[in-house]
Image (cartoon, rainbow, N blue to C red; front, side, top):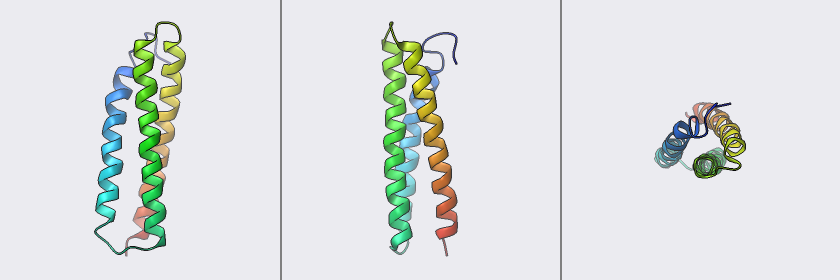
Length: 100
């Protein structure tokens, strides 16, 4: 993990916020096509993923503000961020196969 508190969190926080915007954009673009069951699953997956990125951003922010448990929170923020990226990649693959 990062050697100084706030080092990695300073990068995770704005990137997580950007990824929330990416999830919202993909959800909006998905509404341009026909509505079916798979599209609903993708929308829900992206909505949950936006919440995962929000949790990562919050953990990163709190880790920068906390003197006592900052390193531990930063590590959790990193893990949650990677999980969000994996979920976004899964959603992208699912969306690619859903397109006709």
